[in-house]
Length: 250
Image (cartoon, rainbow, N blue to C red; front, top):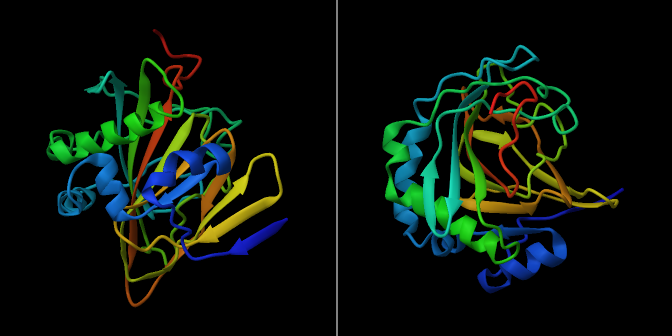
C-alpha cells in the first residue's frame, strides 16, 4: 500500500463538489467552512467553549479514560433543521468491530450549543452542499462532539482503527488542539491501495468524505508538557434513515 505523507491538501472552495465526486474527499480550511456555513469564522470559534463541559465516554472497551463525548441527531429537509428526540448511537459490528452492536446512550449536546444559530447554520450548510452531490429529500444527521485528552499519557481518537461509518458522508472538523503531538489524519480508498496522511491544525478546518469510498482513522495523541487534548466535531449524513439497533422499536 502506498501512503503519501502530505500536509493538509487543501481543496479550493470552488472545487469542493468536484473533489468529493472525483476523489471521494475534500479538505477545507476555516475560511471555506465559514462560506459553507454562511457565518463568520469568529462565530464558529465562539462554539469552542461548548467542548469544555463534556462527560466522559462510559463505553470504551479498552478501559481508557481519554474520551469525552456528547451526541445529537437531526433531520435536514428543504433548508430546515429539526432536532429529533434524543436517541442512542448505534453501529453494526461491520462498521465498528470494537463498539458496534450495542446502543450507546451518550449525553445530549447542551442547550447553548443546540440553540446557537452558527451551529444550526453549519449543519444546514453542509447538508446543502451534499444535496448538490446527492439530491435527497431528508438528510439524517448525527452530531458527535469529541474531546480526546492525555489523562493516561496517550489518547486514541479512533480506538476502533481505520473504519467506515455506514453513512453517505462524514464531516470531521478540527475544533482545537492544545499541547499535543500526534493526531494525524489518515484516509484510504476503500476499494484501492492508495491513501493520504496529514495533520489538521487550523481550528474549524474540515475533512469531508464520501463514506462509501473512503476509510479513515486518526493516530493517537501524546501531551507536550503535562496535559493536552484534541477537540473535534464529527457530523454524519445518511439518506435512508438513522442507523438503529435491530431491537429498536419504531
